[in-house]
Image (spheres, rainbow, N blue to C red):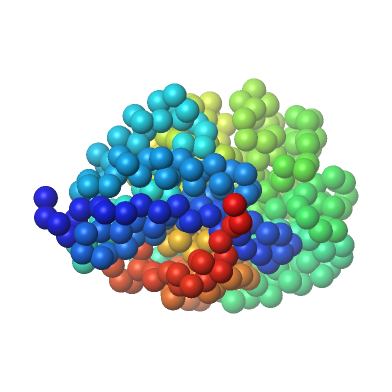
Amino acid sequence: MSDMSRIVKVEALPISYPEPTDHHRFRSVCLVRITGEDGHVGWGECCTYFPEATLAAAKLVEGMAALIIGANALHTEAIWLKLKEQSWWYGTGSGLASFAISGIDIALWDIKGKILGASVLDLLGGPVRDHLPAIASLHGTKASIDEMAEDIAIHTATGLHGAKVGFGKAGNARLGFDRARDIEFAEKVIAAMGPDKSLMVDLGVKNFWDIATAIDRARAFEELGVAWLEEPLGHDDPEGYRALRAATGIRIAYGEREWNTRGVLRILETGTVDVVGLDPGRVEGITGFRKAADLCALTRRQANAHNFSTAIVGAASQALSWSCPACNVLELQPVYGPAQRDLVDRPIWHKAGNVNLPDGCGLGIEVDEALVRAMRLDV
């Protein structure tokens, strides 16, 4: 092993930042910084969102560092397997260990690309499509449906192919609680965006629909042409989803809260999911995402990156979505805050509604380390 590929340092960097697309709520994630013998640096992210999970993931990353220092940074699969083996007691099947493994694995792919002078996309085999459509991913937050419809239409007028809107979020939208209001919202958003745009509805954790309510909403949304309905029965209700699948033809999306390939396989085997959400900052990194997305391709299901975090997960989602046959669209936050706009030199974006190809070595981004220090989460 040459010195240039040897890992000499692994750091966990918990940060906190305001997220404009989430009603300016402060989010926190744990960034991972891996340094090689010759000075190359790789960046990753544990998509933890909450301070307690972020700090816990940071401790796990720090503990796992001893397994990685001295290893060959090019051996991403071997290190990934070693980390999974290490966490047998506290991470088998799910849990905080998956966050830690995710952040480390993304950073490893980044530094691997920099060492080899290749992009992560090239390391994954290159693009499997000529273009990658982008859609807006946002939350409904305003009291006025007309204002929300106008805002969404302004975003999609930039070329984005549609919008996925989260219900039951912070703010005054009160979506997901009243049937008439939900239908009015969908009708007005579809009309405002125009006939060539798609609307996806994502039910939030503050909403609770029983099976009958989910079936009723799904049928109404299907009639309006809603492209998919996400987590209408939460993240884990196979019997409920079977009933919903039997009662409606709308595409059903869930899976972003699965921790690993085994969890994704379990929901695929139920036959109740059409669009499988995958988060590279949660599902054991780029390595885990790719394995899960390959299962989606084999079972003729769509995989969809849950790209709703910092620009680091954004860059990983970009490379994965270009390279995975099961991915055919990528969500972008239409309003970037500091964790997307300022954190890196080249945030992922789109041109006329299509996601740009990655450019540069590794993830193709340079992280503003001064901003990372300014965003550090107090411990």
